[in-house]
Image (cartoon, rainbow, N blue to C red):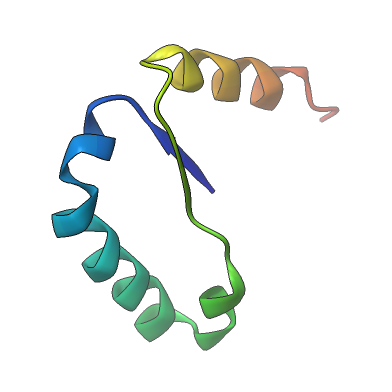
Length: 56
């Protein structure tokens, strides 16, 4: 899972609780890779485009 934009500035505060919450919800999510991108808000648009282009 990739995070970009403004949330990356607060990652030291938001990342560990997010990871812990995901793992608590389903232990299999501990394997989920969380990564940061520092190239601005474009990541949200890119993610939406990839999602929209997926076959139904």
